[in-house]
Amino acid sequence: MKIAIIHNQFSRGGGMEAYMLLLVKGFLAAGDEVTIHTYEVDRQLAAQFPCAISQTRLPPLPGHWKKYLFLHRCNTSFNREEYDISLSLTRTSCQDIAVCGGVHPEAVKRVSRSSLFRWFHDKIEIAFERKMFATVPIIMAHSQSIAREISNNYEVDSSKIKVLYPPIDTDRFFPSDPQTLKETRAKFNISQDKLTFLLPSSGHKRKGLQELILAFNQLDPSRFELLVAGDRLPRKIPANVRHIGYINNLAPIYSAVDYTILPSHYEPFGLVIPESLQCGTPVITTREVGAAELLSEQDGIIMNNNQPETIATTIRQLSKTLPVAADFAGRHRLTITQHIADIKALYPTLRSK
Image 1 (cartoon, rainbow, N blue to C red):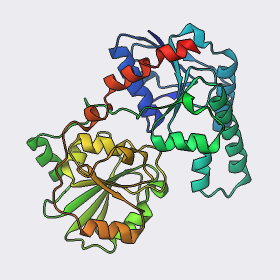
Image 2: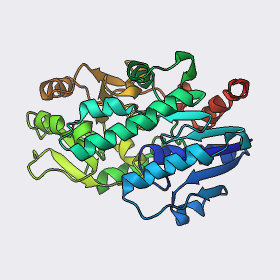
Image 3: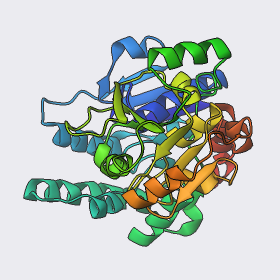
């Protein structure tokens, strides 16, 4: 099949950038012909994938304006009839499938907007998003909660919305062998005499770091420790909270800790949840995290809120081990192969529209 993927940049990163690379990997493995439509390209990365790159050349505008011009040009010049399936990971309205990893009005509600500049850009983002939902044949929501948010914020035909959870790379995320576990625990000074928790975070405020710091301030440092991978921490933190830097491959650390914790205020999906479970490590999260929809009692704990007292009480009640059933990804159709098959299953619907 001929596949087109539209996104602002072809580069490594979190969120949609990581998802884009999984799509490319999955479609190529299935023998499909892939073309990336973008305006920023990491040439070193692109050289690693046998796919075509259609780069839109844009004038040297500030970041937001450059993206808006790209969206406009895609909407006026991209022809989806040239492809069997076209997906966009950004707010265009020219493709077959709009991939939705979050709804902009919901993000605005949860973040304080103090500047007129930011308010103005929010209005533009929402305008592009509204047009996308109104015109694209199929909307792929990355969780049931996102599907509800789309319907709550926009007038959209509910039959257009299909929930497909984003996949994880099972070639990267799997339980570590004993030797790797030993080496990882030694490298990061992870004590088996404590319950150790991992927070992967590149946006501390939304991920609930402040609430975690206040919770661990109440917990015995000889019994409980929090490791934070990603952005730097504030200066004043408890003795049982440690920053371990940005980690390119989290799989060994997922396996080495006792729990992964994600007490986000708002998380449309939260890939760290299935990644951790695929590595055999249980999770603690909140109902504000989309991936919580997939969890059973054997996978971890879903807290009613992310208040420090709730977190501290939950942690104090934990046992040392919580066995996790194998192959979380396979059981929930979160492998790349399964995800690509689910996207292709939409093809007859697309061609009938």
